[in-house]
Length: 624
Image (cartoon, rainbow, N blue to C red):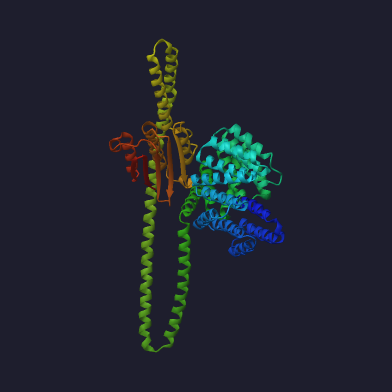
């Protein structure tokens, strides 16, 4: 998508210099070749081609040539995952553009620079900086009356708001994008994003309406976009329990991917179908796609695909009570899951293995030469040969002993792993019991106490005219009702069994946000956060609940920021910051809520740090 926008802006720049058509045609042709290579990830030696493009462009205009090269170099650095160089180049361009005289060309270049910056920060999940860059770009697109760019920018802003859970703002931006978009693909994208927003809001009827609307803008050859739309519809129907429709769209995707789908599309679709049929309990269909998953997993290079596929096959065999196969696939699942976190180590080990084998071959050749020389030498060298053989035998005996020690250590590690597994099962069992008890209490609170409070409030409202004091009682009842509702939600979050950890946190943030308190959320990386142990997930969720309760009840804050970050698979950090009145030293040391939080953090062997001056910052680090 970034490359498409780059092309649009570059072509508009070319139009400004149309009087030099012949030279510009050369520039366009070279530029198209570079963009094509970037799209196909053919980047070897590409910097030389970009440098040639810069020289051609500078002959027409120094700003133009510099812009061409910098724009494409940023995309090249991003493909190489050299994010520091990409950001440095973007910011340097931004500063240099400030020094240029105002012109339509400078505005065109600035527009693309801000859009690239917005994309870059969006990919890094730095949403505040991304939003700022988009709004700067929007000012310029309005000045240039570039409706295509304005539509694209509104779509980008909508994507940011969707990520942070501000669904109303996201809908507003996506609808703005529709008003500016002329291109049918852009209209498809906007309607599709509106459907995705309603899906996140769990308004599945609206989600279905807008995704179906987006299909009206696709042609028969737009198969990739049709695959995305069908996958979204399948998800909508699956969660709405319209399983026949969900199956219909999953199979539509299957038919398309068999004809023209990419390798990744085919793998993803077959995996989705295997999961769908497993959950649906259709044994025959599940068996068919489980076999396909197994075949793909045996040849694909994607470790994450292997992890998902082998887990599904393990579940499938376990349900059939084929425990031997289930165990076999569970071991594969664990193996590849672990390898996701040790890929670099594995590559390093393989490198050492090659070096070691080379050394062994050299040593073998050296030993053979030594034996030949020994046979040719005189008797005085015989003693040296015997000594050498003795040393070699000693070395082999040493190697043998080391191997025995290594095998013992391996056996010890296996026993330790089994103990840890049993310990984990025990912890999981306790968590399950705790969750069941919470669910029972929450149900009693919601069904009985909340109902009784609502009835009392209704009856008191009917008597309100008879006494002024009754109004105070009604207000108190209303506060109590809301408090019981919050406690009920905290005890057993909605759909806690079906949702991932990240989804539960997002729902908690939405639930706790009010007109008076805006809560922003950043989580990174989301996929990895969903894989941490359930005990840590449960305790972290409870800690965040307690902190948000403190913010709502005591801080008088209007804004609150929650940041959850997983650092190098070593520890998870929770940062909660508000702009409220702060906490007194007495509250920090003796507050019941903070004591509960400290207790949970200590149980997880973590660290808790609180700063309270203008507002409050709570920083929690938990090792994983």
